[in-house]
Amino acid sequence: MSFESYEEIIRFAISREKEAAEFYAECAEKESFAGAKKSLEGMSAEERKHQHMLENLDENREALKDYKYEWIPDIKRSNYMTELTYEKVMSYVDILRLAMKREEKALALYNELLRKAEKDSHKDVFKMLCQEEAKHKLFLETLYDDYMAEQGD
Image (cartoon, rainbow, N blue to C red; front, side):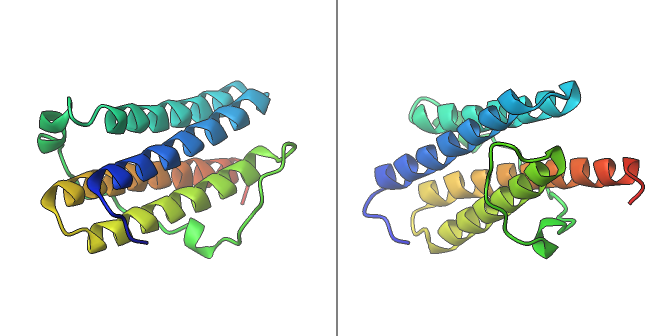
C-alpha cells in the first residue's frame, strides 16, 4: 500500500479507526450481558479516541511527541483462529474471536505502514497506532481467555 502524502495516510487511518469504532458500537448495541456490553462500548470509545486524535493531529503534535511507548506482550490467541464473518446474531465468544482477528489485522497493517514510512512524522503516527492496536489485541485475547476459563475450557 502506498500513499502520496501524509494527509492521505492520516485520512486512511481515520477511516480505519472510524470503521472499528462503528463495529464495536454495533456489537455492544446487540449485546445483552452488561459486562460484555461495557467492554465493547469501551473498545468503541478507544477507537473513537484514536479517530479524534488523528483528526486533530495538527493541534496534538506535542501529545504525539510525548506519547509513552511500552512493550505490549502478544499472547497470540488470534493467530491460531480462523477468519469469521460478522453476523448480527453472533455469540459473545464469536464476537471476541472476530474482534481479536480484526485487531491482529490492524496491528499488522500499521506495522507494515510503519516499515514503509519514509518520514519521521509518518513513522511516529504508525508507531503509536501499532502500540494502541497491540493493547486492544491483548485486551481482547485476555477477555477471551477469561471467558473460556469460566466455561471450563
